Length: 569
Ligand SMILES: Cc1cc2nc3c(=O)[nH]c(=O)nc-3n(C[C@H](O)[C@H](O)[C@H](O)COP(=O)(O)OP(=O)(O)OC[C@H]3O[C@@H](n4cnc5c(N)ncnc54)[C@H](O)[C@@H]3O)c2cc1C
Image 1 (cartoon, rainbow, N blue to C red):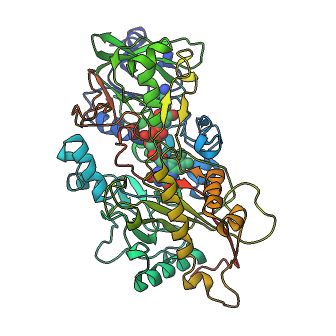
Image 2: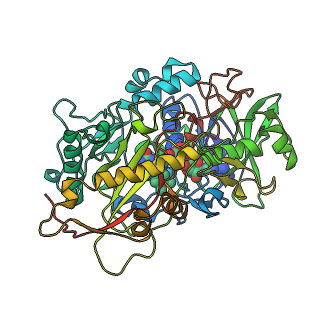
Image 3: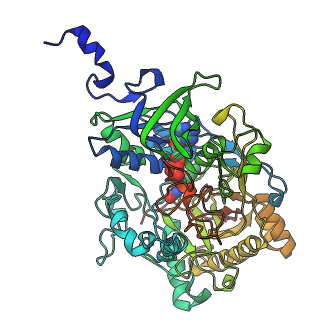
């Protein structure tokens, strides 16, 4: 019979119950795993779940942030805008943006199990057919094409009934009752409380579509996730049972206590990847404080980098994987010369405000006027701009009286490029990197936003907004827009530069490519393995190609004062 003492000698191999959430590296039962996943965010948790399904493989997840369980601002969908800027946010900022008259913008990124899927506004959208086909083209791998991706997309989410009052939600169309969802663990529902403005948006869209205004760009759609992203329709939201459905609730928490081959370490940052022998990176240094101590953990199969588009590229750079000259200039020994690391294309979040989302799927517009050689969208089913409706006053300095409608015009296919660099080699991931979005550094973006503003005016001239009953729904524009709207083009440009903020979708800091010499900035291959390196993959939003630009946006405010009645129809 095993004695208590002999049991304790076996301690690294057994566990009491299956509790596997650790808050200190020194309590981990092992220092060696088959796979180490760095970053328990949107992408990381999915992969950790899939890998640990094989009980013969051991998996460790290392997350810098907190346990997300029980944090109400994360769990309650209505409180989504309240999570950025708190302890579950990395609270990065950009460097001054010359295109924005040197304003500095916030860059929110999730800092908890679930990553940025805890901060995000739950808009549940799939990229367009054009977008995925462009990934296939860029990587030379048909596995990224729209047709090839569909079976995987269906494994992610399930459409569930709306919670509060299902009768308020529009029914899914009879020919597509799942609205392109399948049977996966993320719960998705339709609006729980559509408001007056939602129906005005839909009616406005139908009116303009019927009149042929804007070459069909204002068309109504009942499903934006079916391959054609263009149109105005109701929002699908990643929530169910009244709660946010995140990569943590769907993929990680359900297995934390039940898979003996999975350990999750929180409140611990990966500081650097270590080259164990020529070009092979199978170890990672982690720390809980800037002064250490440092613990080295080893992956015998692979390290999976899923620290997000800021965190993954920061780690690659700190590990000597990136542009050689740039790294050597700040004293980081260069291991692998990959000039494309941190050649970012990114946009972040702006000011906090009091606002309530509309239930309208942020309508996407493909703008024929912008087509041509320079149009960076991936095709006619991909958007150039997007309208974001807010049932309230979006921004700081909320007026004490009045009812407000905010229509933000977002640019979804920007051309400007930014960059992410290390400020210094000291203090590892405890030093914030230098994030430069390069906003409005390409003239095309300004042109597209100016067109977006004109389109917003066309849209708000539809009958639902102008009809007197007893007075027009929109009474007048307010704020800076009230002046800029009636001014010159230069006034409109100033309005954009002074008010523009971003909507949180940095990508492309370690992008995938076919490896062709004509694309020297590719960092991973189509299977997301880092080029020139063994044992390392990047699997998060960093890999999206900058030429395809999924869902990136910039928001100038456009305010107007409706005689708002909160009526549910
Ligand atoms: C405020 C906001 C609203 C948004 N709204 C929407 C929306 O409505 N719909 C939509 O589709 N998208 C939205 N997005 C974008 C979406 O959230 C992101 O594109 C997506 O979550 C990115 O996933 P990821 O896996 O690349 O990174 P993340 O989910 O950010 O995961 C990265 C993880 O790695 C961890 N990490 C970082 N560095 C380290 C390190 N050194 N060591 C250990 N761990 C580390 C982080 O703490 C984090 O948990 C929004 C984003 C924000 C910020």
